[in-house]
Image 1 (cartoon, one colour):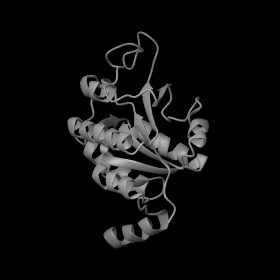
Image 2 (cartoon, rainbow, N blue to C red):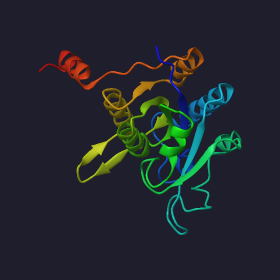
Image 3 (cartoon, rainbow, N blue to C red):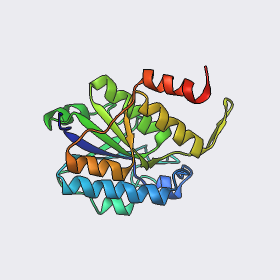
Image 4 (tube, rainbow, N blue to C red):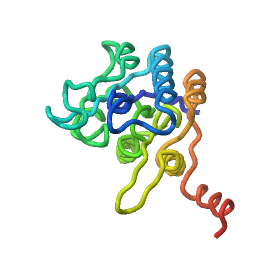
Length: 211
């Protein structure tokens, strides 16, 4: 068994998702925050590389304007920062777009990224898809991430439905999905997390719902 060389990527754990118009709805944001900081504590305990990402928009933007309350990291995340952590500002959905993160991870011999943070339905999804293209294995912490209710001309979906659907989707191909507790045990034991594949998920889907 190959021991994964993990890095924890804390995606946009910012105040916007707690006090702004994009407040996380599911799982409950205070619960997901507690799991984000728990994952950070495990990463610190085991000397995992940690990347802390903040979405950033120009001054005057309604969300994530640089220097604003919306842009700021949640205080529980802020107080866990260490000088060795890589800090990134981004303006795209993927944490890999327009920066040196892929090269930095290669320098650290990282082959597996663990995604915690927000949102399941945007930056987490985009980052997992980008990681596949880069040849990186991806893990996502189902209880340390979260989604929002969405409604537009295409329809509407609750945050609960959206989060669950995306966890199933990600686990079918792009990422190993696990709770923070299960991931923490895997870090301690040096084991990879199990992931399904599209074929297996399709067969199990037919068994669950019929052909």
